[in-house]
Image 1 (cartoon, rainbow, N blue to C red):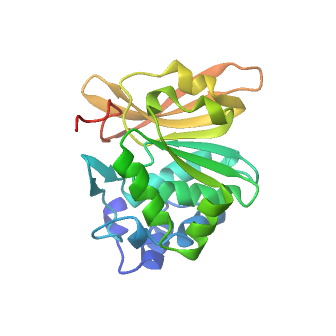
Image 2: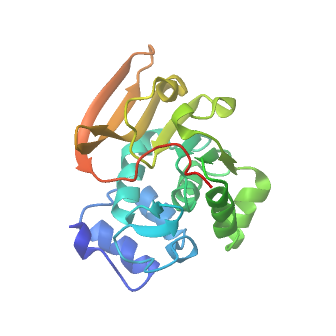
Length: 223
């Protein structure tokens, strides 16, 4: 259904995803309506397809952002702490911030400094985005996402926006108990989304969900 979700405006795009069953929660719908994708996608912002943002990176298709929000929603409560690895354009970081509210915190991590700067610039295009940055509710950091960001741990939710070559132990360790990670992982020539849940007793359970195609979670490209 994703191919039928593109629209002429941000509202059209979100409503089309809801109509096609890709958004099922009113909270997710409102959070995505509150972020104009045109501030983050340099071209065709309301098409339901990934868009290049430079540095061999992309902003994922809107339906993948909706899927991540729906999957993590039980852990995106007011006051939650969220780690967004491979934050890229900063779009989903902003949506997460809407979901966790004024007492929550979202940390966006990218390994390419120009993308960290781009996310900050994109978020500053709106009054709401500027307030998120100025209040410290959203922070963008340059770091190796494969190692997470221990300084802000533990996290209620971790989102990984690039395909990992393996299940990185450090990321699961930085989850709260309970907590959930949404991560694409390579398996042979395929990639699959996994939900990685840390239970209250600290047990980690990995569940493979559906096939995807993401850019890889790798070292930063050479200058």
